[in-house]
Length: 610
Ligand code: M6R
Image (tube, rainbow, N blue to C red; front, side, top):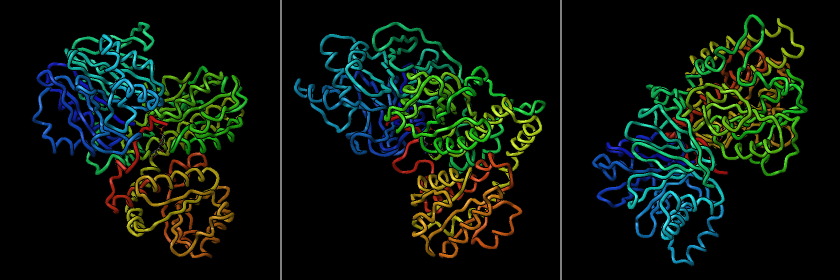
C-alpha cells in the first residue's frame, strides 16, 4: 500500500509530486507528505489526511524546488497522524525517506540504534530505515552505499526513496516486494510506485525488480542489486493514456468502471475468439496448454474479489477441462506448507499484480516446481513478471478501490480458458461455436442491465439505512453472492454476508425477520427450482427479497418483493451479468449515504503488505 513519487530535474517538482500523489491515493490516503531541497536545506511538509488538504493548508502551489519526494500513506505501524506520516527525517535533518512496505525486524534494529544514541520520533517501522542509513553515512559511506548496506540489514518489504542535502544531485531508490518505477525524461527523471503517477510526464520507464537499488540524477541513472552485483536495465515504452485514468465526467471512478464494462469485456476478448474453429486463443499460454491439461490438479490462489473469481473458475475448469481444482486464499496458502509438485498448475489471479500475499504464495509455488500462470490486469506488474506464463485481462486501469470491471474481465478470461481446454479435449466444434456466440453477445447484455440502472437506484434508496444484507446464490452464483456482499461491505459499511442459498437452513435462517433484506440470485438454470424453494422458505419467515431474475421469469417475480432483471446467458457467463446489479446496488447505497466510494475508509486498492 502507500504511494511514492519523486522528481529530480530542472523544473519545479511540486506540481508533479502533488498531482502524482493524488493519482496514487487509491493506494492509501491516511496521510500525505513531501520532502524537498530548498536553499541547501531539506524541508518536510506532511500531515494526516489527503494530499488536497495538505496542498491547500500549506499553499504548496507557491513552492518551487527541483528535487523532491512524496508519499501517501496507508497506515500499518502507528496510527494515521502527522508524526507517523512520511517523509521521515534523521536526527539532524540531513536525509529523509519515504517508504512503502513493512520492515519486519524493525524492533530489533530500533533497540540497537537506540543503544547507539539514535532517537525515534514516530511509531512507524519505516523510521528505522532513515536512522540506519544515517548510521552508515556516519561511517563514511556514500548515500548509495549507506542505503545499500542498510537494506542488507532489514527483513521485509520496501519501495524506498531517499534524498540527502549533502548529495543533493541524486535520489536513491530501492525495491523489494513493493513496486518502484523510474520514469525517464529529458534532463529530468521521475520515480513512482505506479505508472499512473508518471503518464502525463513520460512514457519511458524502467521497472526496478526485487532486491535492486538505483541512483537517479537529472540526466542519468545506474542500478545494482542490493548484494552489489551490476545489472543492466531496459528502458521500456508504456502504452497508457491520461484519459484512461480520469473520471471522464462520472461522479466516481467506481461508477465509470461499472459503466465501462461493455467495453472492458470487449477488450478482454478482442482477438481471442476463433469463430471458424469454435474455440479461443490465449497467446500468452499457447505453449503451456499441454502442461495445464496434463496437470494432476489446478490450484487457484488469490485474495478478495480475485479469490471470488477463483471460485467461479473452479466450477468452469472442473466442468469443461475435467481437472480437479482447488481454490485457496493466498494468505493461507503461503503459510500452510501446501503439498505441490511439478505436475500441478498454480494460477494466480490479481488485478494489481502487486498483492503481497499472492506474490509470496507465487514464489512458494514456484520454488516447489509447479507451473505458474498469472492472470493480471496491470501490465508489467510483479505477479505478471514472476509468472512463467499468463494472460492479461486488458480491462484497463481500475482506480476505484472496489473491484468491478476487473472482476468481470477475470471471469471472462476463465471462460476463454475453459473453452480452449474443452475444445482440446472432447467438446464439439458446434458446442464451442455456441459458447463463442454467447461470449460475443455478453457486452450487449451488460449494456442492457446498465441502461436499466434507475430501478436499482430506486431500490438502493429504500435500503440505504439497513444494518445488514444477505446475498444468496447456488452453483456459479454462490461466488457472485460473496462478491456482491463484499461490494456492499467495503463501500457502504453495511454488514453483508454471502451464502450458498441452501446452506441458509443450517444456521443463518435464524437471522431472517421482516428487517432483513436478502438479495437472491435466481437465474433460470439447473438449480432454479431449488432456489425457488429457498426463496419460499425465506418469505415464510418474512424476509424481504430482492430477486435478480431473468427477463422472462414470471414465477418468481410474483413471489419476491423487488425485481432486478438480467438477460439470460449460458451458466458459465452468468456471473458476469449477475454481478452488475450488485455492483450498482452497493454503489448507489454508498452514494445515498454520502460516502466516498472511491476511497472507502481503511482500504487501499492494492494490498502490498501482508
Ligand atoms: O489486485 P488484486 O486483485 O490482487 O487485489 C485483491 C484484493 O485486494 C481486491 O480484490 C479487494 O478485495 C478489492 N477491494 C475488492 O473490491
